[in-house]
Length: 130
Image (cartoon, rainbow, N blue to C red; front, side, top):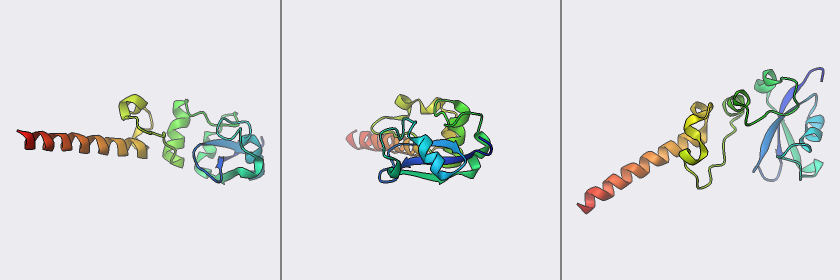
């Protein structure tokens, strides 16, 4: 690729899963997305490609960023607001406390806030019982 640009690609109807690919155009990004875990089951017309210029510098010769690579994860969370889908899991189960991107992660902050509230709520309830 002569001049790769970063694009977030996802299902335009449902943002359950997304990734970042490097391509020379939005159309090329959508084509490449068909070869990613996030979009492999979608039709080309269902894929959205949104430019993320801040991630252009993360290009290292591979067409897709790797969520399991610490440098990629940090950039994706910090510069493109990616986060883990926490579901019913807590920070410990997700491994949030050892994540390189926790400082920038909305899920981490939300879980930390919920855990503080739960701890405070338990203390309040214990105080009322005694």
